[in-house]
Image 1 (tube, rainbow, N blue to C red):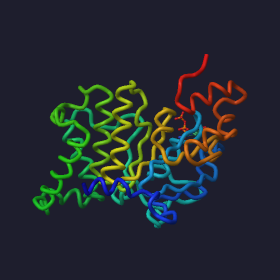
Image 2: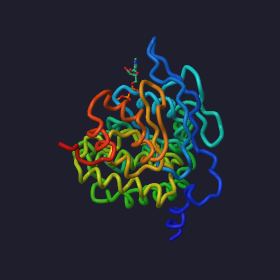
Image 3: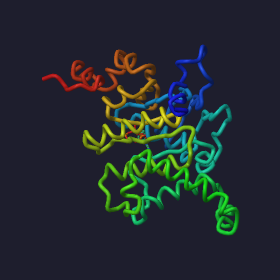
Length: 288
Ligand SMILES: Nc1ncnc2c1ncn2[C@@H]1O[C@H](COP(=O)(O)OP(=O)(O)OP(=O)(O)O)[C@@H](O)[C@H]1O
């Protein structure tokens, strides 16, 4: 029941817009002469599901890597809960509550599902090598109970109890993606960054994942920031959509607003078939 109350939290109830949990400000990232990002700025509101979309090469992966700390921007800043984290290293950002999944699954494939989740938890608790080295001899018991509780909640939530001892490599793709989400959740993030969470999934797997994403926000009160190509999913789930093209934000707003934006239509199809694009953006079948 308490979880239901969390569900109703997002900005809709507050009279004025909340402080953004994440702010990307004038972010520029250059690879030699190529500006993968060029002055990108947007806010992520707490409790929202925010999606970043854009054609191939628009800069989505570069943006994710910069927000999570794998790339250092050429200019601009990333602010998390009001603090400038532009120069904070990636593991520290994860420990602060900015956890991510990867487009290509980054699990330890030879390990079990449970061990992968434990690793995520470990990353949450230990942010430097010395901590990790001393871990075995220190404070182990205190943490054990809390850790188990978190792990069990995640396993229960993502319905992966039956595969907890299975080796990740042996699992179907859809389940591997779910384990990847479990590992990110084990970091107990405030903002969960999902890189193409349904890429390569069939319709049923996609629907399952969409449900989990909604529930992450509804039951756990976690803000979601995702990059995704599946327009139907983006338009169904998102509160706010940011559209990138050639490293710049060309539109942002509600799904309805970005679908109606002529610049977005042009970015996706160039001078192509606008009817087909509108169908794609609406997530419906492309008309004959
Ligand atoms: N490591 C890199 N070195 C040089 N150029 C890069 C690098 N990473 C990305 N780029 C360039 O930056 C631009 C943005 O690429 P990015 O991968 O961020 O786009 P994307 O929107 O994620 O594309 P996709 O949807 O195909 O994954 C592209 O022109 C790309 O070639």
